[in-house]
Length: 274
Image (cartoon, rainbow, N blue to C red; front, side, top):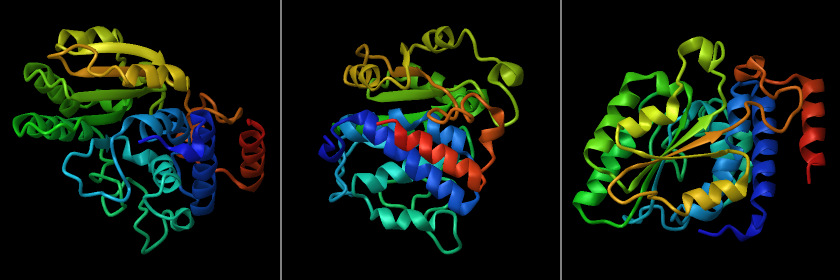
């Protein structure tokens, strides 16, 4: 779909960050750094790439999008509300008792295909959807957006092997490669490099981009599959906490929610970037 309300995708990404900031501050919940790093990727996916319609959620030929890094769901809920899956006022219920906007992505929310948050399950699910789509000759595509930390999970690498073996060229994996996990840097926890070479060795085609450059993201995603007969992997280099100076590249903001003064400062920075 083409989301005309935010013709400027960078503006949509900014709105996603503002909404996520407000939700996380109000709920005093966490994962703001991960929500900010993924904003441009979600803006391009929902603004330009995914073939979905909020008014026809059960369409059998809709693209399937799996938000595997479900702990960053504030950003996902924000973009879904912005493009009309539910009213933006519901964002105020985030993380509250009785709300369907749970602290990890929930399939009770319109537009969310599956609940995620236990890491490492999104790509296996997307593999199954892609295989079913091909076997039933349906035209939909499957996308899975993963955190870099999920690439420490064995189930993720089983799925990588599976997709390459079955030549699932209707499948795209997108890695939010911000290089910081919950308790330390990726390199300190379990280093991934040479990351692209590992995917290639499993029979995937690879592109590496700046994950905050909406033009680069859109150009790459419009060209999937990068090669017929191969699943596609887009490694998006991003910054944890992107958009707020004192949160960028700071491990502290994986789990922490901003206090009143931090919230005010962050909001000023985000609203000033027009």
